Image (cartoon, rainbow, N blue to C red; front, side, top):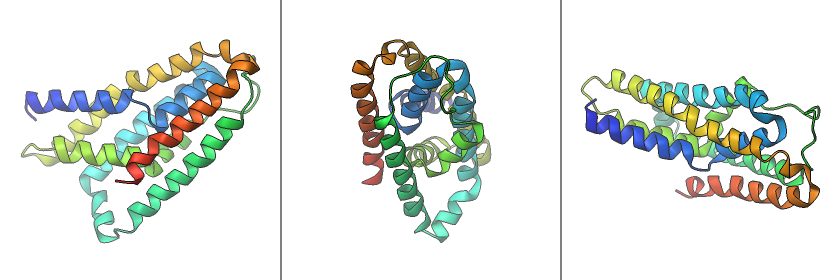
Length: 198
């Protein structure tokens, strides 16, 4: 992979990682409800799970979707249904309570598994592979793309947890929390619509 392609890949990963999407909306909500430290397993599940998905898709899992083309739309709609349910829960949740004793954050394995039904994740993975895994050594390019995604995603998605954590005190007031939760639910739903209607 030459420098120009690598630079373009870095830019792609940054934009994909920092912009609002299902993962970042969930991480910010977790930061609000559980704080930064308790959301770290969720973050690691997102970045490692997504990087692993990129690698597996790149080295041949896409052959399954070529052989069974109806499987990908089914996964997209399953992911959309999950996000609608999640948006409903976010919209109905109450003020942040100190002590973080209510509920528990999404863990590493749940967050990693979510990547396989995340429509934006699939679009980003396929986009990254088709655009940047272009060197004569395809397998090495796939590994480079997956590792770049991993390294860039940690700070990009981590910023969303920091932002959510910073809002904890403000969102302990019921006057602020209802519009915030409804706004987050709408953003979560909006983040998946463009991918579903591609």
